[in-house]
Image 1 (cartoon, rainbow, N blue to C red):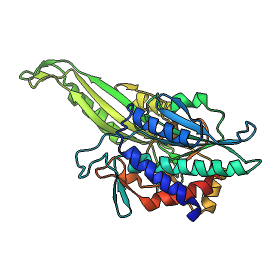
Image 2: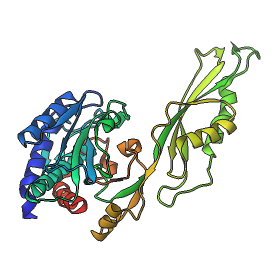
Image 3: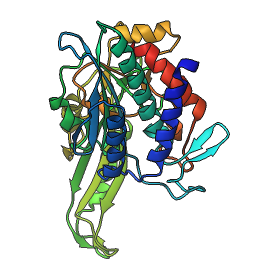
Length: 355
């Protein structure tokens, strides 16, 4: 719509500037500087903690509910298959190429555009219905403790959050959690030419195979069952020594019907080896399908779904919905891109959803 044109153009221009700045996880200072300066230019008096930047809407009233608009500024490192400069915003027709364009630069600038539009509406209204906070957070790609988790204690109570990630503008009302497990199986060292020793690799094989058959009884209608995948194995010191230790890593994707700690306790009791969890903090998350934000999304013709990928929703102790322009399958790929038309649509949809 034409009333959003100025916000759309500003969003695309800001995204192009961000794409030119390397902003790998834990190295986002330059990108945070740019966003802080942009918000100051818009008279939004931003706050900052580390490389997290946020701003409040106008006409703030503690008695009103607060809606958080959040996306992240960090990116993964470029893979080897890029055929373009990943740090040059390359526009080709409707496509805008660049590292982080899809995940999650387009969501970030679209949410910011919606926030500024809503601030403009609030300035004209004597009694807005809600407060809004726009938060550009860091370290999302590594689930770092210096990201959104460090900022939440500094924010007022949040009624609901809209998290910008590439979902094709479909609202994700549940997403899988993540837990990384480290297992170790012990044997006894010996010379490979003799029958001495106890091979830890051989002892680990049935344990690893057990994980391939692991199933949990509670299956989610949105996310399916819990998924555990052995992804790394490390054993042995040299070819002629029977290994006395075999270590392996398991990637566990949980659904909203279990906590990570519940899943760990079940696995640890049955797997037959020593097991440790790196963290329990990234639990699966979900929002009540009857929540007003979900109902509003349905009214707008947006179909809810369950997301297999993790986001900062896992760290939010309040209701949240994940929605944004772009496609999840483009994330972390060579020649990553977003459609300019997706950004234009996102600004309009965000305003309609949030307002």
